[in-house]
Image (cartoon, rainbow, N blue to C red; front, side, top):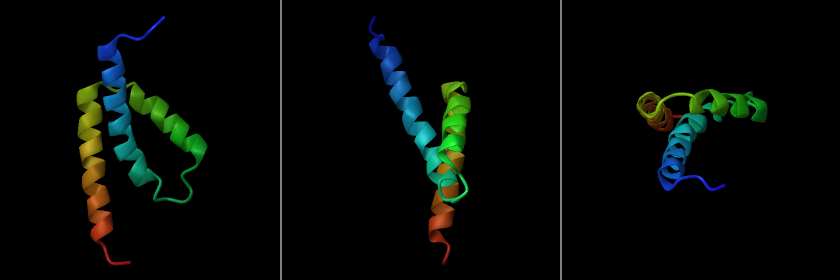
Length: 70
């Protein structure tokens, strides 16, 4: 049984949004693979508009963290 193309596209979009969140969380060395798996599971349950909002917030945070002097 094959997934319908629109569902596959939505899945790929959600993956990209989830990655934006995970990119920030991975900056913490205590964020484990198990944590990542659990966060992905939670984020997949969000509708696309909520996930987009969250990804935008995390993108802004990532940019701010990159600009900080180390």
